[in-house]
Length: 235
Image 1 (cartoon, rainbow, N blue to C red):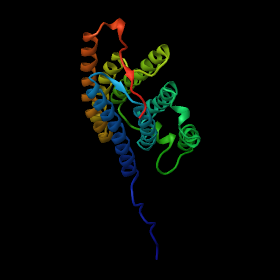
Image 2 (image 1 turned 30 degrees about the vertical axis):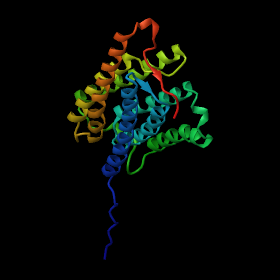
Image 3 (image 1 turned 60 degrees about the vertical axis):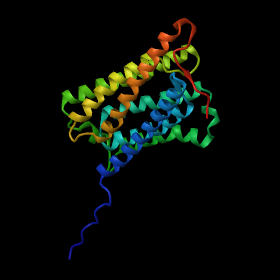
Image 4 (image 1 turned 180 degrees about the horizontal axis):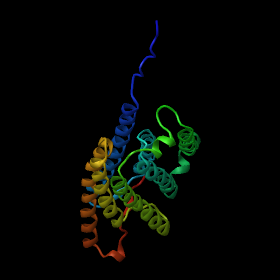
């Protein structure tokens, strides 16, 4: 009498979906937070909590990218993760976090990547290299994620020059363009990427709204006498 191995309670796809949706829920919450504070002030504000939520969300998206064997998501999130940490450092908030959290923020992504290279039943580097995504769709996703990532490279360089963490108008314009391209990639990818669709539909609306707010702010005051955007005080 042969015995069959019990089936796992959750499939890799279900685990990935749960992690991805949780990440996008956090990403959306940071956008809502930033949007509400900006609407109240009638100008674009960037609270410290925006970057803290971004960091946790990005780590979850790194896991999601590995589980989905998606090189576009994985590469973009690894770079974004480092930029989020740098913005917290510029705000002077990084050292205020516990030493355990900071150490974990550095160690966990490296440990997960090492595990990814070694491989297991859920994800592996070999599986990503044989992802099977059509070249045209992959190129579209890569372009979209590259543009979306460049918003933070631009913001990073802008903030380094200013000596503080700010989100200028160009950041939101690039965010809008990149989000539309990523949304298109998510729809064309097979299977359709529900997580990316959920995350980018709402984000695109908020990016457009922030562009309107900043353009209105720039028209109201001389550009030479006002900052393009300023961070809100830490909660």
